[in-house]
Length: 403
Image 1 (cartoon, rainbow, N blue to C red):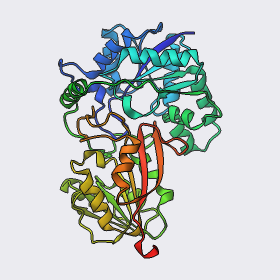
Image 2 (cartoon, helix red, strand yellow; image 1 turned 120 degrees about the horizontal axis):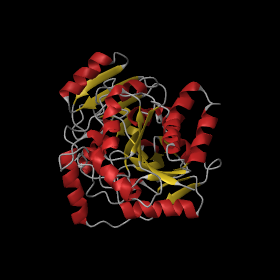
Image 3 (cartoon, rainbow, N blue to C red; image 1 turned 180 degrees about the horizontal axis):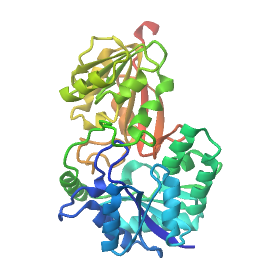
Image 4 (spheres, rainbow, N blue to C red; image 1 turned 180 degrees about the vertical axis):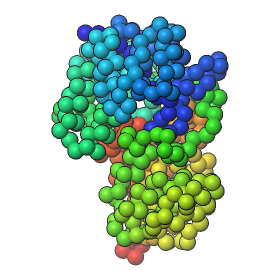
């Protein structure tokens, strides 16, 4: 049995933005170099390996790997499962300590504990129980499990197969009858001072803002921003009027428009709204406005959708009240946000705060009825277990006339 750290990265993320691994850290070096140093300190026998798509832009990772005397596998683009298998084969590894190229703050002792937890219990795959540790913890997976993902995906329809090969951990997590999945529940209690220190460092790394504008540089297969909208299509009744808050350039509103009678997309960025108007000419109306001052009439909306928005809003209570104002009695609000039990001082520097499941539910339950809570993990919904990287909250405005 041999475990090797594999660092998964690309020059752009799925949404097309410059990958965090190539951004400059506080010492003037790319983040990936700190991740390599972290990987070398793990209690693994295999040689650390970078796994990235084989493109000219990604040759920077090969150069970096050579400089730090580690391996680099450049191969499959969207077939992440096969890419990880082939990267691990360079060390003849049976298991992978999987790291993202953005894990500047990797907690080495905690990652070693997660690996030991997976080995002792013979799990195919281990992840942190929720999204709290995603900025300082990786995951653990067996090569056998990844081979099974590839084999099972070969029997699926093309679109479904492509998504599962791009997001193999999500497929494993969603099929506990086929794989042995462990939930690592050892969540450290980092001090507020340490969290603030990490947030300050992160703010200097993540320069340029956080907007998933989908410029075409990324890939629709595996793009979680698009996936988060697609997951809720079944919750949009035909003929409904839908409000998409913080719609960006309209990529999500366009998806919702497949089901809705009309979509109103609202964003605070005039440029984003102008781009939306030019790019999407379907049954959507795009308007400039903020999440706490939405330019629509009272009680005029059937469904309000808010994907990865509320964590950016300084006055989240004002947003909840505004959502209540614009929805019709009986209208529904669908909120997606990162999940974090330590979210008052989030590491992600663009976020005002992040929420535990209960904190998010408590924020809405005075004004709304809580109908359902889903989890979101590695790019797929987990309805059976709300714990994950993110949370979907489904609430409805009380229908007074029905009381």
